[in-house]
Amino acid sequence: MSEGPSPPPAGWYPDPSGAPVQRYWDGTAWTAGEAPMATSPQQSPRNGLGIAALVLGIIGVVVGIIPFFFWLAVILGVIGLIFGFIGRGRANRGEATNGTMALWGIITSAVAVVLSIVGLVVLVGAFEELEEDISTSTEPSAAATSDPAAETSTPAQEEGSTPAESGDVGVFDLEVGDCLGEETGEGEIESIEAAPCSEPHTEEIFAALTVPDGDYPGQEALDTEAEGCLEEFAEFVGMPYEESILEINYMTPTEESWGMGDRELLCTVYDPEAETTGTLQNANR
Image 1 (tube, rainbow, N blue to C red):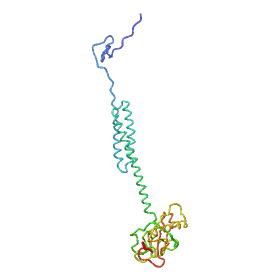
Image 2 (image 1 turned 180 degrees about the vertical axis):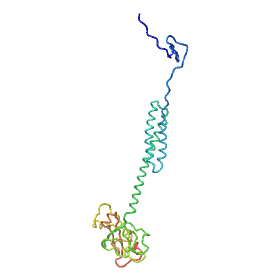
Image 3 (image 1 turned 90 degrees about the vertical axis):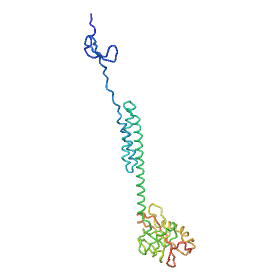
Image 4 (image 1 turned 180 degrees about the horizontal axis):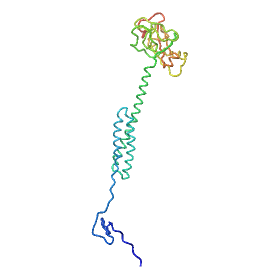
């Protein structure tokens, strides 16, 4: 005859009746002693990344609305997005219990990134505007050559800009409304004698034309541009140039001043018969 299977060794085993307890087997029979079933420890929810995402997102939003701190907001926002997506994934797999918190972490972190982008755009725009203001304030504002055969003009005269005293003035400092104590003549001019319009003077600047930008066009093209002085002469003097006894002169940029950004052509009016005292505006002669 063959032998049956050998009994299990002595030890604690699940109750053969199916009860949720353990019974002790002494090697030959079950004893009366019982013990609770051993259970494996339950794993704690992994909520750390969801919490971190929400905290980073909130800080990023606060920092993003502070000027010049947009760069910090984008760093916090990107890290918060990464933590938020990982935390949300854990919640979906049942490894975490704060899925809603992780979702809000994603939302606030995204807002922080958007605020950082807006801050960058605003800062770049402010620097461009500042650069434009600086370049405008340093650009030469007057012409550097003259031609007595002129017949042109444009903008209306600005008041209150005439010099208070006589003396040499650099051509870049001349403005509409200034009066000149000497004729502009021909050739290049670096400075010219200015005089108060209330005193006897030879010419008065009554308009300034802006020459189109680009390469230096040459004197012939600038002479053509100076024909624009005629359009403002009638409005300034009060009658058409063809019917007036007054004459027009003008000053244009030189090739050198053009390279410095000079784009203004100054128109002057004068009486060929005598010096003028006071302005020729609305002279009607």
